[in-house]
Length: 175
Image 1 (cartoon, rainbow, N blue to C red):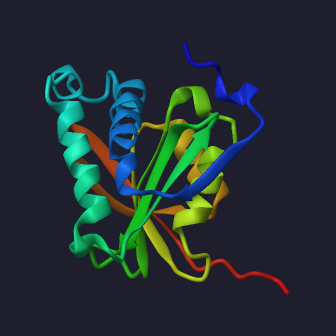
Image 2 (image 1 turned 120 degrees about the horizontal axis):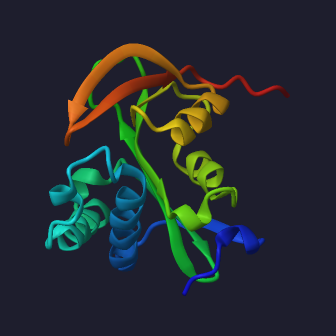
């Protein structure tokens, strides 16, 4: 059984590679099951092909030239992928430069710093950024608020989950 990542001091973040697709799919599916159980229908979370679909998604995201402008990173602890993140061009007219498409961590990696390291790896601080966050998801809301994201009033429903758009202006770095 995997140890709690908070017990492990070293979490590294790097660009994702095509050979990470299987582990990334595992993190994607496991984190959805941990986070969205009770918010999303069980038949979606427990679909027999869920893991295979996520692996196909990640293989395409990491190899298809159509996605070459996306930034994709993984967080590892003890050589195991424990978190994933992806950003790219804004998909909607939200008045932002880019969009955080996703950031998922295994529950065992919460509090390890992996989430912040992933966000920093895929988001350019000089760009304005938008994202969609599940509501309710208090842990994610708090994380994004700490990073300067605020709701802009846009709401949608996807996969049975209410989502709220949050945006962040460019971060001004002091010299």
